[in-house]
Image 1 (spheres, rainbow, N blue to C red):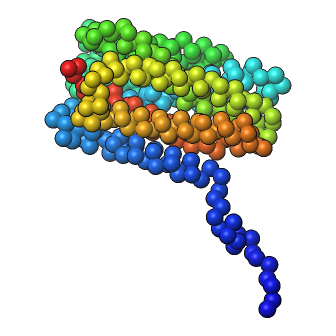
Image 2: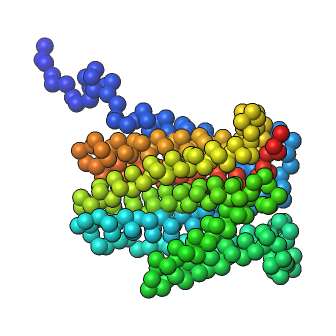
Image 3: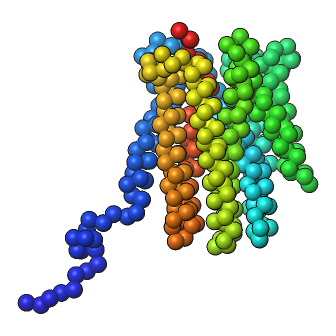
Length: 335
């Protein structure tokens, strides 16, 4: 009998081995898939069986709001990461080409679309004749919509100027306008709600846009040690941003769904169902962020943390889409 050397991967030990990170990756994929089911199918599944009627144009408004949120995150994140990169000693001076100007123009288009809805009495206009532009100056929602339009326009011009950092001010105006818009004066304690939304939207923009630009910067710097340092510094900020997002998200939810009705409204209202989907997605995002942080701290090559971080970007894109849908759905009635 001839003894043959076992081929790699044929021994029992090798057969039972799994690639590192396969388990967490599979769990995160399952979470993301579950969370994405409702928003990916639009508002109709979320409304099914709740007794709530879908408002005209809900899908279009949700799409425009998603585009606006994504467009806002890009320049905010680029300004954030550019500041972190400049603070790193010995870091390369080269940074990826910014997408801020293009993102601001896209945000302007989305803001114009949303303003046209406001100018038509919060209905999707059938044509230009239905849009009452002058009426925007007569209502609070109209003025806030115009502020967002002008904010993105000013930010786009600033991004294309010799001092792109000045776009931070019009972008801040857009965030303030969106926070005020989300909480009409007829709402219970609207200023508190606007404050929570202001912090929530700012932190979300820093996290999403910052992660995208951080990964682009690390790719540009290739194997430079500053890349790992930049990811590490971003990760520390991301932990704080996640804490702020969680606190403001819980606070906002409890304002609209009192503690004693939360469980029921999470399944019986469209708003609650999509909010639950967002929570599931954020759980997946947090798991990916933790995975990336562990790799950054323990792996022989800290830049291997880029892999789960890229997956985190895709999951965050779904979160942005769900958030856009959430703003277009009817708010639960406080019982």
